[in-house]
Length: 162
Image (tube, rainbow, N blue to C red; front, side, top):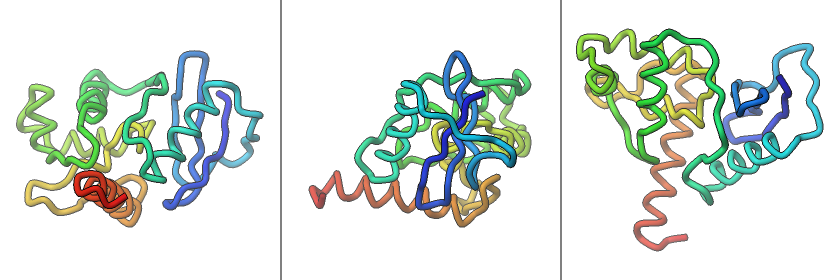
């Protein structure tokens, strides 16, 4: 894996790529004992898309992904998460139903926690059944910042406040 670090309002993000696409986003920067490389085209594109996302300029990610590992269920959850539109939220139960197991809300939470590419695969858009923020591998404070960012950008765009 090749790594770069991207500065963001939720702390540094370590971003890794393999030969196929982005395979990891890590909160808090790159793992220990990892050296950043001069960004190739793929890593530069990912860094640019993340920077534009946090600036509220680009609302979708188009960088290719290389999802490694995960059970069949987890991979199905991650595909559903990737499909949740910008600034929208789903409940764990809704994601469970979408992958064909409406009683698996807790397992969806586990899959969200194991998401190898957070932010790009937007597990932060999943909330509890009552709409409350619950659980987030990067910490609830990061989830709050991400949801607030998306809500603000959406309102600014809808009402021409940019």
